[in-house]
Amino acid sequence: MVPVLDRITNYRNQKGWTEYQLATKSGLTQSTISSWYRKDLVPSIPSLEKICNAFGITLSQFFSENEEPYVLTGTQRQLLEASTALTEEQQLALIEFIKTL
Image (cartoon, rainbow, N blue to C red; front, side):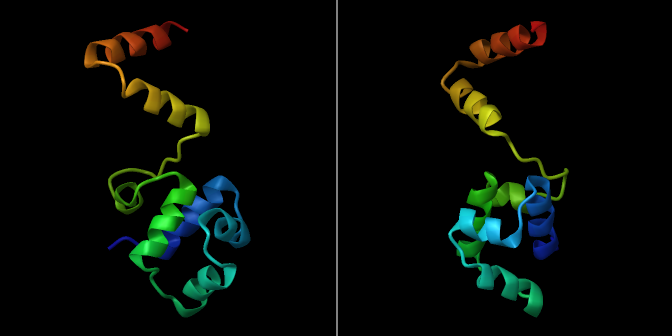
């Protein structure tokens, strides 16, 4: 089982965010987030979705145990979103072009 509160803390630390900053970015209250830690509670799925949105990840990525959590920068996210409009052949060409830079 994924230690949910530990995972939230890891993502928060990667971003350099306090609990207050996470609350602000997720739309949750700081008291809600603090209570999870004080009472060792697992957040509800809707709350986790808000947390994941703040981190810029999906719930699937949050619960993935196969690799280290990775948070995309804004620029990386833009590149990824822009590349989805390309064909597979164009995506491969773009990868090769990026390697030459």
